[in-house]
Image 1 (cartoon, rainbow, N blue to C red):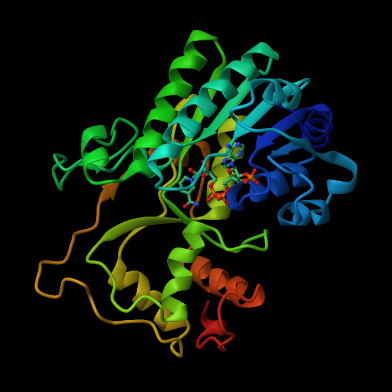
Image 2 (tube, rainbow, N blue to C red):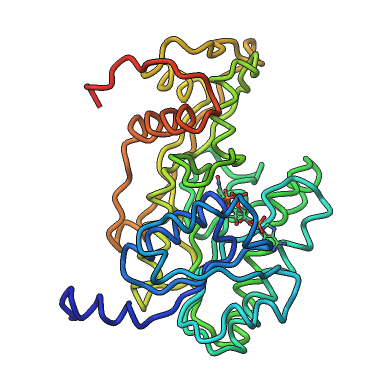
Amino acid sequence: MANNSSADKQRAQELVCVTGAGGFIGSWVVKELLHRGYRVRGTARDPADRKNVHLHTLEGADERLSLCRADVLDYDSLRAAFDGCHGVFHVASPVSNDVELIPVAVEGTRNVVNAAADMGVRRLVFTSSYGAVHMNPNRSPDTILDETCWSDYEFCKQTGNYYCCAKMMAEMAATEEASRRQLQLAVVVPPMTIGPMLQRSLNASNYHVARYLMGTKKAYPNAVAIYTDVRDVVHAHLLVYEHHHAHSRYLCFGMALHRSCLLQLIRGLFPHYPITSKCEEDDKLMASPYKFSNQRLEDLGLEFTDMRRTLYETVICLQQKGHVRIIVPYQRSSL
Ligand SMILES: NC(=O)c1ccc[n+]([C@@H]2O[C@H](COP(=O)([O-])OP(=O)(O)OC[C@H]3O[C@@H](n4cnc5c(N)ncnc54)[C@H](OP(=O)(O)O)[C@@H]3O)[C@@H](O)[C@H]2O)c1
């Protein structure tokens, strides 16, 4: 096994590409790759846009980060982005419930896999979503969600969950194309991902938390979601990339929480925000949390961050970036 310095040297020679480098998860993937000594090429549809400026301030960016323009629907731009790359992290996707964007996610992923194979890329990591896993009304409440579970496409469509349709079809396209082109593929399946942001703008999954602090959400749904710290999601991407035998899906699920429990955790840390305590469905049984297994990822060595710490650091970051009012936390020292 390579010692640290020879592993570092090997990484220093290895060029990897991250699609959607300026987004919430993409930025953290870039940061971690730079931290580990890789040379990184990040793609963005407009690298010069101010929204990507934070990437240039990351440690190691001056020497080892370049940005290039690529759209997942522009095949030639992807081929140019992957030229000379050993690995690709395909993080980019529309994060939207717009039905018209399903083909962008699916065809875009097909393009990424084929362009990577054309350019001799060795390993591809695809960022899927638990939207591709858990949306199945016929699943028994006792089922333990694992890598064998898939959402029900028709159910997602009928209920207007087009983002889940897109991620499901995109993951299937990635698997199919990678197998056809004999490209090594590992898939990370994150749930609702929260945590400090490197980018300035507020992304959708952190807005999920911010809207309760803003007081704009007057009642919470009777719903359960799974949450993970963005740094755990990124660690998972690196683990499946660097373990050369890692292949197919890896669930990266931190904690299942009913919305009332999520809000209780935030309230415990920041009691002065006007967080609603009203449920939209007070008269119904509380939705019960899912059971799940992260065994495959844990076998590679992933340990999950404590959710209270994640929430604490998320809120502090939201304050620092001006997305929510600054209110002093309650129990900072007990974290
Ligand atoms: N955050 C979560 O809770 C969560 C959970 C599960 C899975 N995921 C997955 O994680 C990935 C990143 O999500 P995120 O939360 O970091 O979202 P985000 O901050 O909105 O980032 C999305 C990225 O996708 C890029 N993109 C969108 N359309 C594109 C196109 N046509 N061509 C090229 N790039 C395009 C955007 O790049 P531009 O700068 O060019 O706009 C942006 O960098 C997505 O695949 C998402 O499905 C996220």
